[in-house]
Image (cartoon, rainbow, N blue to C red; front, side, top):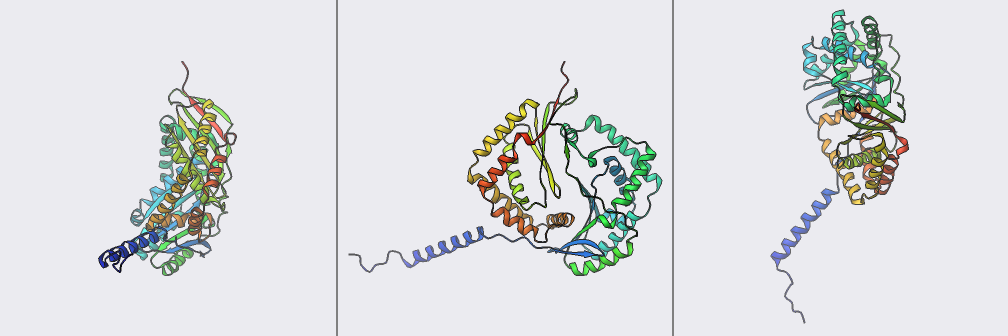
Length: 408
């Protein structure tokens, strides 16, 4: 018979209660993630704008201009000349940064002062509307011609083969004389920097006040009539299914390419998880890698291997499919959790948030896009992700190019 003596002393019971309480807190915290913010979408002087309240005292304004179906040499010459003009303005050298994307030009203004941001925007828009002096155009054309000449011999093999794989207007180079090139670049400037092809993204501690200031600046700097908007990018025409390129100066290389779904697809986040898994598998294959470029309605995936030939393409994809089939549910779940953790970490960075807001504005994504993205990733089924990855590695869907050295 057990007496009245308790199993645990008061001190022991207190310790047990504290351990249980800490465990409950830790478990609750691990299952609770910060929800991504929801943007606000509206129009500013007739231009689409997405904005968020910024937690920091930093003002960021992103201007996106579409560049679909643009000759690369024309665009490079235009941007070279335009950047020479921007270097003549102190306020733009302090606040302006340019980023090039496959389908857009992104101009980023950042400042800790709202008045400086507004002044920089006015200077920037004026510089885009005013004619550029002939000497700027001529220096830009000469520099870009020289750059093309050097790239013919020094461009990395993977970069060259990416251009060969895809036949897309925006990746073509012209062979025009100087007068025709500069005339085409001037026409492109009028079309590219048009309010009709512009979208805005704003991260600001006081977005309503900032928007009011920006609105008056936009209205005062618009120069009608507007040029027609740049047409959206068309899905690429892949090169011939089998192509062998012989070059003495470059090593053997195999490049495979296929189209995928784009950012507007309802399951885009599932594609992000799928491609993250594929990239992880390729890390275990020597000389292998991938590049995925998602556009609005479609994307293009490129896989490459060094020291491989056309005959190796099917065995390589077959080996990848076997690895995918052997992926455990835990491995897929771990990749899913890694993406969610990275997303949560990125939410604390204003640079990342502003960049995502800019993407949302350019592609006209829903204001709650980040929350949808996170929720869809969290709810993804590992079995469906495995099936999607197996489908993605269907050998018949790929165009294939191999580069081989000249045989002696």
